Image 1 (tube, one colour):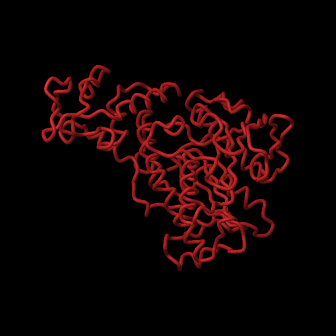
Image 2 (cartoon, rainbow, N blue to C red):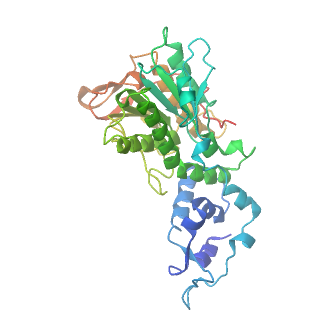
Length: 394
């Protein structure tokens, strides 16, 4: 389909009855775009911009036809005219929050052992192994990930390895059913991945709300305290964490969780905000710190927290990721994942110091102090991150 074809859909059809954006979702709009290869992050961003430009476009219908003389005189039957592969990709991921799962990882002897908490199931909570006297770490993975992905595994392992005695609760959120298209499809093209990402991003509010509801259950039954909760999200999981922190404030009369750490929060759709979604903010917790490693590519560009730390300048490609087969795509994923590797490393190293203006400093990652002066900081690391690619988990 050429660009001129879009004029048949848009034209001056502002008075037509169906909003293509709200009726079919932005993922449908993307699939009407020319099938250009997503070979660069600039192309990806342009794809989003062009899709979102159709947000107010309306198409013809029998019940509410366009005005006479409109450029849009086509008849469009979504059932007959939408190919099966498009219908398939309109359902890349599920939308039911009851499919979101919560796992407690508190076994310091066997770190591959989990106990699942079922939402609103008091018995599973009683047998979860959560110690109400200890702080709670909540790990939220990113797009096309799940519990077995590099993150949250590397951070979970870092916490458990550092415990000679049990000193913290670890709760892993697995929203793969609502954010991992590879669960349902063995192979996805670049366009498919972009399309499915939008669907996952549109689930962010739903996932964040359920996380907040689950944490509120823990608080209500005495298994957690708001001022001892630390949310940690990567990529899309960062914005989900923002939703969770924000909704918890509504449930607790404005009181906030103690801390929220965002690991290279996702950029596409959120920064710039061209999807009907909410970006994380510095107000989502009492203290919000951010590690940037891939800004203006997969990660969000610019300050987004209270304390923002830029690893190696957070350039599109981290120094040790430029050898990836496809420097733009695979290399970008590698750099995006470095944020989780850096944080995992920081769990056992409180001497990782980032530098700001006027001699200000900030500790990177786990030991970042809540009284750190707000602002931007730089941290240089030449360590090898050969395993930092955020490959999709199935």
